[in-house]
Each structure stands twice: as structure tokens, then as C-alpha cells.
Image 1 (cartoon, rainbow, N blue to C red):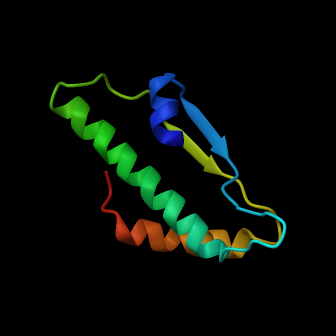
Image 2 (cartoon, rainbow, N blue to C red):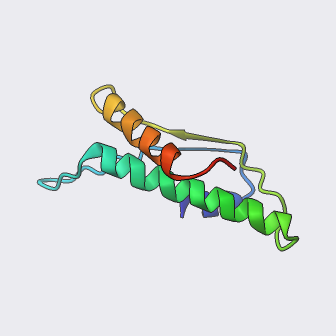
Length: 90
């Protein structure tokens, strides 16, 4: 949804911190990063395909930063690697 909203708003850059932390609720960090990044890649591919078919303008979004704290950085990086392996390049 973040990618779709960024495209709708015609932004060129997007930054978000995808970690889910709540009192007593924990999710494996790599799973969160993988799921969010996979969804983002799929949204970008869909937007690019809609443009290619002439149904939408070319998205202006050119840069996405996923923020992670020092403690969670290695886990987030591993999640991103998994996501990049799952989704073919644009």
C-alpha cells in the first residue's frame, strides 16, 4: 500500500520503517522485511506494467529506503535478500 500511495501522490522518494513492534507481540524481523519488500516489488512491477500497456502514467517513484535500527539491520538485510530472490527484476 505504501508504494501505491507514493505512486498516487507522485512522489520521487519514499522512506519507511517496516519493523513491527508492540507490547508483547513479536514477529521475526526477516519475515517482516521479506513480506514488505516482496509486496513493494510486486507493486512496482504492476505500476510499470500498467504504464507499458498505456493504462497509467510512468511512476515518478525512483528511490525507496527501508529504515532499520542498528539492532535489526542484519535481520532486515537478510529479509531484503530473500525478497529480491523471490521477485524478478523490473
